Length: 342
Ligand code: GDP
Image (cartoon, rainbow, N blue to C red; front, side, top):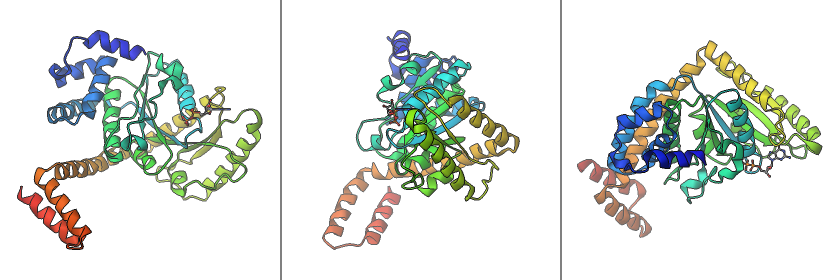
């Protein structure tokens, strides 16, 4: 819990409201973890003044994001994501890298629970001064949560974190969102009873830059190798990726720290290839372009639904639809017209 105690020490008497964006920037660039935590809380705030400050801060941090590697890690609950992140993160800090671990939790938009909330699952990393772990922010929508995570990436990079690991539970939309903000996307699996490809969405295989079969230890070694071959065969059926990277399949035991170094070598090979063919840079630019569109959508949505008159009229229109007095199309036209008049 190093991060928390540092935080208390350094801004104990400082009201967060009095900290300016430039003070935040200065301290973040110095690698001050307490200010970094505070700044992430700031971007998660829905207060209007905080939002303005957060926007300025993010903008000034953007210049410092170039040397990082952003890695998305997804997998079903129980495959060993936390254990894997603990192992990979510890390897990376032993190589003198600074590692930030963030999360996008689809469930946190519904209830307040969040992955990484239980940090005790990452005992080593939590106490490692070169690691920063932040649970998934809770939010009204998955898109909103993802947006905050993207901004948190920028802040972490400005604070000098070279490797950003973003964890998500492999259910539904969250993988697509994580993919849209990382350089490298890793799918963690465990071997099953020979039906490796069953129950796995085609889209996720297509997104993966590496498939890592975890828990390849003890009696599982044989089935993990079998799964590895199955996935390798399946990946051959996909067309070549635009970045010319051929996705890799490997096995590991996060628990016993086996095969983790190999995973890191795969990431390095990917970065080397995609930097040399310029995809790495172009991909980030494209991600930013998409981010712009998403951000506009999000703000328009927020603005619309929090508008006083709209709130009242929307209730009325929903009732009209229930009573068969209006059609969705008609109701939309009315609401939009009202919004435009504001
Ligand atoms: P998550 O839900 O994906 O984050 O999974 P966890 O990291 O919490 O791991 C779920 C369970 O699998 C825990 O009991 C871990 O100890 C266990 N586990 C994780 N990695 C391995 C591994 O490589 N081998 C074995 N045998 N068990 C593992």
